[in-house]
Amino acid sequence: MILVVKTIDADGNLETEDDQTAGEGWEFQLDLEDGDIEEAFPVTDADGIGGWLFTLPIDGTNASVTEMIQDNFDLIDAFCVDAGSLAAPEALRSRIDAEGDIVGELDGDSVSFPVEAETAYICFFANSPEPEDSVGGETATPEITLPPTDAFGGPQAPSNESWRIMLVVLAGILASALILTPSPATRRK
View 1 (cartoon, rainbow, N blue to C red):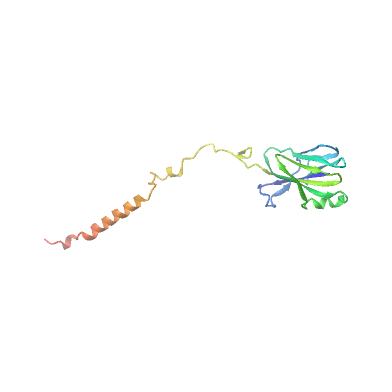
View 2 (view 1 turned 120 degrees about the vertical axis):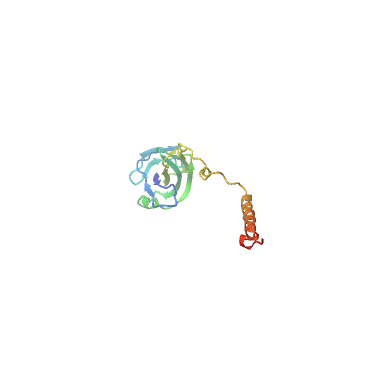
């Protein structure tokens, strides 16, 4: 058995969990190298869960789970874990949140991994909505290009500090001239 757990992460950051919701209505495809699919629930339910029951040869086979990515969403992460034996199926639901041994990781829009008979696997897929004003996940180019900010302040200031030195020198000359020049009342005739 392979279960798929679909999560929509509003901010695209899987570290924050308060913005995550179950992904209902997402379609997945299972490809087995060998074996027969007995029951298929390839579209996720209201809890974001879908999956397949299958029979395998005694020595197992390879499987690949592929997400049919919906428009305006980005696939941000996916992996599959070994959930253990099917001997206790009532405990399987509680193991969905438990982290088992990772058996496959995201490659494109699929996760491929070896599967064994009588073993359950859980594949976690997480998507985030594309940002508004984006095209294919890329931020859109503005329709107009604003001028550089230095165009609003008048003429451009010199790029070096020599103008400040020049102002200090001029202020010093002016101060010296005012101090050293005698006032008209103290001039001798």
